[in-house]
Image 1 (tube, rainbow, N blue to C red):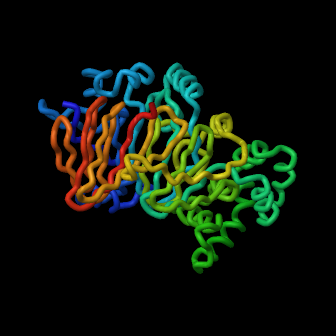
Image 2 (cartoon, rainbow, N blue to C red; image 1 turned 135 degrees about the vertical axis):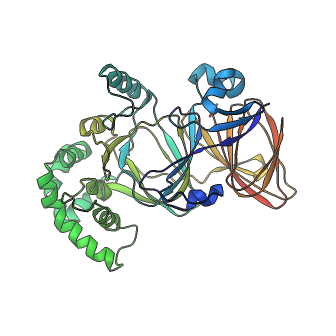
Image 3 (tube, rainbow, N blue to C red; image 1 turned 30 degrees about the vertical axis):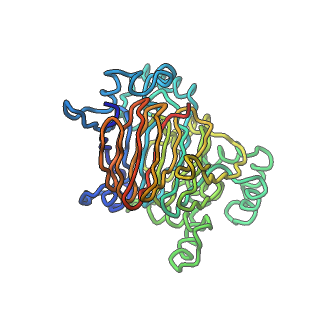
Length: 400
């Protein structure tokens, strides 16, 4: 057998919405946020695979015959299923974050292991030894922060926002690195002095519905209003909202984020595919651990001109592939209607999730899929997808 039903794991992070993921999966709301739905073999939350011998975790199934299940080239290079596939529902802003390169992740993971820091310790930076490039494909209108503004736009922000005028000379003399280092290492009392009049002003405009989502003040106000009750300090992550690109993505459009690109998701739902890692270095808008020296060490201090990917047509127009330079993964969207057949042979292990409609997948087994259901396909599985009406699926595989 090379075709299996897959059940992922819901992650209940505080920033998630309550209804989108339960509705997708056809289950009752959990009574707490449902932020992410994980499909993959990451040891912290592996998917469950239904086999003829019962249910087994995907990472354990792979170890029964690794090369045959993920593919010989994939296993030889990665020694694991190298991607983690997710559905995200972003209700509140995520933390400002950066992901390390593969080489730096290996060094950081070994260093924290040698220091005896438990893997689940809240102050741990490296949960594994892998890099974490990632691509997101929007399922709704989606907003995110993505990389530093180009030089002219950042200069305009610094000179037009009264509270930032004192930072102009730092940027002109020391560039992106000096500017960001300055605000990230700034004493909290000075952060409060600089940002309090700004947050007071934007909160007033936000509550009067005077700010569009393209205005950093909109998100700065949300961040300021989202602080825990009794917290008087202002989150220095608000600087990042003004210094980074605010990007709006429409359904079906995608954004790739490589190691070192500072970013944060702001609002919406998306499909996300990344290297099989949970390494995050945080820089604000979060109660979680922030390690400023480690963040500065791994951030790319350069202008970013956002590249919104539209996808490339494949399979006679039935599939849209979103290319990235990452070897670990590739994501595509499949749309079929009655009478159309999508046929493919997996050149690496694949995971498919049905986002809408109903479909039948016919390979070494025949399975009927309903909205929110997923399958795992082993290397070399030849299969056909069909529908009696319409079906939209997303596919994760390896970029080989």
